[in-house]
Length: 453
Image (cartoon, rainbow, N blue to C red; front, side, top):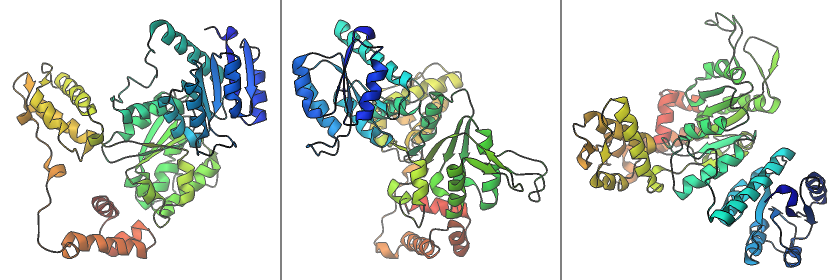
């Protein structure tokens, strides 16, 4: 379908949006029809057929579903329209927009959009519609599909669809998930498919930074700012200027560090230690944590205003045990990878080995699977990996010893309760809590993770 001949219906209750889209598309398309009231959709589809429909996700109409766009999308499908439906959404509704793709939408665009991007999205939707009509199938879409992010499960496909939409934007991203699920690979994929791909990608494990190193590492310092400051040094914000800054383990920084980070993100400028001069920075921020989102909402532990600042779009990475046959895909990938690395013939996994993998719970997620396959490849003498070759880490899989001692009297329970009380006493200040407990901050973080506090 040529864009010049296409008929397009635009449905949005914002008259300014309708006017802007009509003025933009009129010179490009064959026909542009605008409609403020979605209840008139049936009327318009009865009058004529459309090649593409731009449909807003939210309306102030008589239908109060909380996601009106999905309601009207279903109505369009019920009316057997073969138009390519493109949803119009805001950042906060991206999860619903991704769901709309499963409900039959062709694509979605995010407000505010670049005009060229909107036109390109419509052209792509029309092209896919034409391909589907002529060949009976839709070609595989998505520049991110086929990268190091391996997976065919529904959960991973949903993530890939979301990444395709958010990667080209400058939206701040918060990646949530257990340790070892591949959050860093997702951060790299977002950068590699963004408009900043040719600029630096800088990763910082902020959870491992001490109070004294936090400012110096992130914001830099001037010569003589402290004892070991032998020369001027740019921080990670400056190093990432123009590109992407990835702050890993963001949930483990103290409230004092959070306040300093929030100030920089609000002002978009840093001040090196030992200097009074502010330096503007232009970065796209991606953060990751293994903490549940509700833990970040606890103001004794994390500032809500910082959560909102870093969480324009949220990506939840599922644990490996919930990804089904992705385990097999990843196991074969690692088998090929390490066969090449250690100069061995490509090793296959027999059926018993695959069955063993599928029935294991993988508390260490992809990282544990990777090390398991690497160990098996190194120790293998044949051309096939068998079930007996797969030895899971005792660090992850050691069962808890049974005991008749009441739970509240177990040493682990006492330690957990003590840690919780001390942290509450110091209002979430990890440094003070660690000092009172007589352990290092790193040791305390390990216990927080161990006891899921």
